[in-house]
Length: 444
Image 1 (cartoon, rainbow, N blue to C red):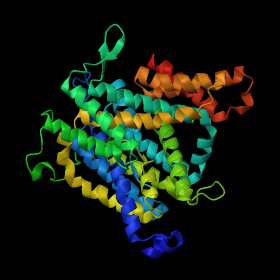
Image 2: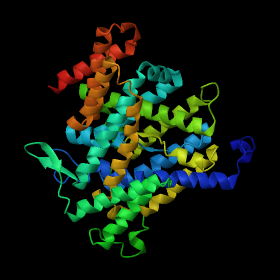
Image 3: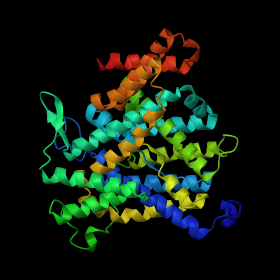
Image 4: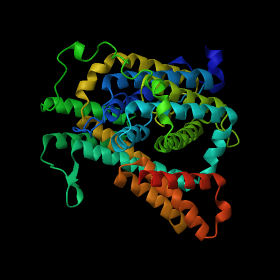
């Protein structure tokens, strides 16, 4: 085992790797509860006609399985201390844009996730994935990340009641005297304080403190016994294999845009995470990542596994830096993290205490972290600022990640051509320009 993971080369040992794996798990354990709540549209009381709600328990199991298998593949095949799980932002796009906004059945949406995973595998094996990543301007990559952050935060504010609807102004500040709103505000303060103190897993611990506070004041029913904490694994039957059964439903213009969005967002989530974690761990050599193909394949395979199990796109997690910071340097760290995700399968009864008020602070804090990429956009160049701004602002205002990406990718070649920078536009951007123009024509 030590030889396989090259413990001696990296100057590590079992204890260090175990602690690193546990640290990574705690830093990202919130996804076990946030992802089912997001995909099941918890907080949305009345669904539009024809829209059905995915089974929350099945998604919990699918989330844990996708995270465990994806992380295990990364640890054993790529041998990197990087963990995977259903991605934030991608799950919001799945639930709020595709299912709630477009009215596409969640079964078909899962088929779209499966298609994106299969395309990823092909692109990875042929080496095209890295080339396509390089074709998208860095400024638009940063804008997409920031826009998704604002969108996720807006969902958190809305689901908690901190922001509510207003017929005259569309939105307004919610009722700050409402006990449920106050509980969500408490959760935000708790999470902010924990993260400001540098506590790894602050988002997860903030959720725990919020749930406890909710029980104390009577807003959340506390577990009545051990059976309400540890129980049987929820059946995955409601979601398992639905992506395969409904694969034939994806061949429409609307689903093409959905699949492209899944591809695009996961592209840069994964690439950014791999670079960030590898740089921190000291893996980068001559500005290149060893075994990059294996790492990208692990991510692609995890998306396929997750889609078949019943969850949105599975991707590499930036929270892996927490484990690397704790000393994790080999794939054994990921093996340990995967083990904790499997163990978590028996804690599904806790879904009952993870209400919208408990998950909202996590959404808002993740939004803050993602919005940090705003600083990397060249705002002083108008031809860059326009498509970047439209990308960012359109996501929360139209309640659609796809619409934000579409607007940005339409305006980018226009402003760059008008500025005389036509040679800087990659041919792929023209193809995307046409696709997104057709997207808006189809929507109208």
